[in-house]
Image (cartoon, rainbow, N blue to C red):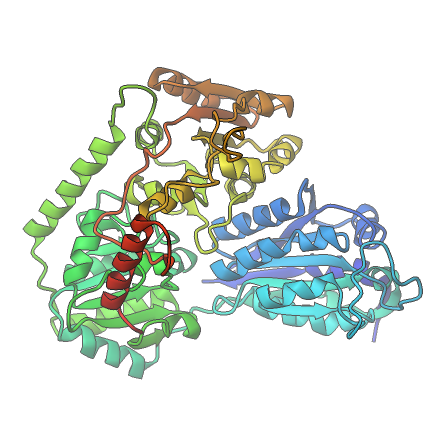
Length: 621
């Protein structure tokens, strides 16, 4: 048997360089490169291997470990989970900075390979700088924090363990049903140790991403449920994108006249002007979708994990005999609300159901005139919000309307947290698949700028816009510098509303007068943060990093800034002043946030009573 004597780090990179995936007969390189920040724990292991070894892996220098990992997640999401970047960090704080990103990947079912440096396996110099010592278990390091947020976790304490560990890692990363964060902890001494690796370990491997067909039994049961229903409704989730099931979805809906609503992850699967499209569903959903959902007698879920926002905390579906059909590649996700499970690839499942329902002559009893009226009513409301005029300042919905009208539909928008996901899910008019990139499984503030960078890496020929609030921008904007360094242009549209206004609104909606969520100076008399707004020049801040920057306080300035930003060759920021609290509200929906049972405030007491009443009416599943 031929062998190659390599360090563990060199062997790891050589292995990653030979991983490919194949779907529908098309083969593509799976690992595109490595994003990293070096420190003790990886600089002389993986760092030296990346420096000295010639291979087809791009190295991208991150500026914040969480940021670079979020960029890697966004890249994989935009590539429909068929390509990834690995991420390497030093030990201790550098590694722990990636834990939030690991959770973001796992919650969203997105593959990312994390390679945190770890403490010495030999223990000779212990305790080393940044080592956590657990007095009852000396095998524990900071990297054990990755265990609950990873789909696969391993620690390589001997160089030969790499071979079995990486095969398991690839199994999870390329499995559409089980993918998420994979964490391989790399002790700094083991990274540098040599071993005689068999050459076959480095042979090209093609991992086939199968389109799992539905079982006949499951398909028959789903058909039986749908066939006896008159008012079905489809909820399209992220699985429609990952399976590229756009045509099967529309064929299924059009064949039987079934309206479609979308989750945050599913949005842009269907063009907004399609006659069967109702918009977003649930807490951040449209009036049209939420009204229709109340009367639907069967909900056909396609590739969605059914988070509480999609179901309005299980209050959105009120038909007394409503039933559920779940089409999902993941058995766990298909079991979220009791119903018929069709565990299969979304495209395969939709195609099979189309054939079976056609054979029995099924047709939904959807009143297309009533549906059209419902859609038109909602579109008038979107138009109203997009044109909303204030006596002073800009509303958030007006700004989004101007941005939406400016784009031709080929761009990609990236967002994640705050009030923007609500407005974008409800109001944004998406025309093409993959043009709407929302991280709302984990709703991770700080994802937006890094996510835009990762999305642009994946879609270099498209304009990519991060739409972000000032709160998220302050949390994490470091990968703007990385975008400049890589010559990868993104445009950041920063809506400055002086704080964490989404949560400020949530407080006020539940009896509070608002506390601790606006960016205000401390009031010397009260001791609280109730003074004037903190003034921050975000455009000047961006310019200090080398980013092109513009400011807008009115519509004319916004229009000019959008035109100028599109002409820029480098990353650009547009800071837009918006009036706090001018986002859209809920449309016949609810989100359960528990309110104190005991409070000195009558408003809070009243809010608690309303919460209990709504909870009692929600599904208990």
